[in-house]
Amino acid sequence: MPTTSTTLNAPAKSVFITGGSKGIGYATAQTLVAEGYQVTITSRNQSEVEEAAQKLSTPQQHVRGVVCDVRQYAELEQAVQDHVAAFGGLDVLFVNAGVGRFAPIQDLSPEDWQAVIDTNLTGAFYTVKAAIPALSQSKGYVITLSSLAGKNPFAGGAAYNASKFGLHGLSEVMMLDLRPLGIKVTQIMPGSVATHFNGHIPNEEDRWKIQPEDIAQMIKDLLKMPARTLPSKIEVRPAQPKGS
Ligand SMILES: NC(=O)c1ccc[n+]([C@@H]2O[C@H](COP(=O)([O-])OP(=O)(O)OC[C@H]3O[C@@H](n4cnc5c(N)ncnc54)[C@H](OP(=O)(O)O)[C@@H]3O)[C@@H](O)[C@H]2O)c1
Image 1 (tube, rainbow, N blue to C red):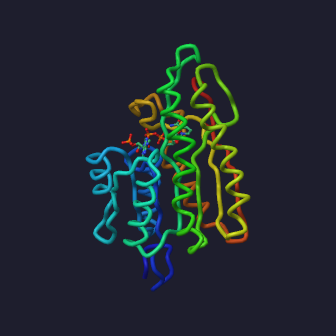
Image 2: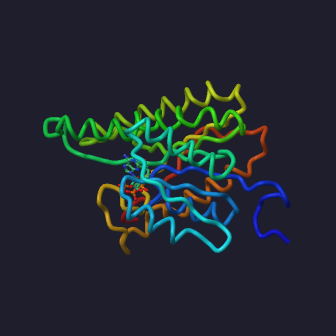
């Protein structure tokens, strides 16, 4: 009996995850490996992405760990091409890599602004753009990791809010543009998730937050929706606010 959700003798589906060395990307890779997916994860840090890929690999499945900076379009094109060559296609693209820099606008440096916009917004555009040829072939699925910060402004969030408001809009447009090609787009907008985001070290006090594996479970469930149905935008938050 097959132990995965793939049909007997059908080629395994594959997923390309930006920013998969830790946090939500890593948890999603782990969940989809267990579902039988072939997986590529990326990050900017060679030793971290290779170590993560090694930990995710099983005797049956070799997870590819690739250095690829989402701010560099040529690197993404190459990484997607290599994924397709390794796995015979691309079925799911998880547009997840992101960074945060938080300061009141009067203190926010142009470099920090640039880093956040280039990664979270332009990087998302580059990632999808580089993968459209492969996703058109497979009638694939794009999942973007936006944020509740993409609709709720907060003080100190100039760069991050702007990047996620932009990604919110971009995700909706991509859904409309790509739906006629048979490509699904879902945007996930989480509140607080217990990850390494912005230098945080997950700890006991994070128990009130969403856990990364909860977002991974949501993605696993999305991928099992009937082909005719598309949940295009999902807001998700801790069931109890901090301190309650
Ligand atoms: N944690 C939260 O509360 C929360 C809430 C809502 C939305 N989000 C969003 O969730 C996504 C994932 O974040 P996370 O919380 O899982 O944070 P995380 O634990 O810090 O993981 C971020 C991942 O992105 C990678 N990354 C960063 N910049 C990159 C770049 N230029 N190119 C390629 N990879 C890059 C990181 O690896 P390297 O640094 O080695 O490159 C790492 O693998 C982000 O888009 C974030 O905005 C997070």
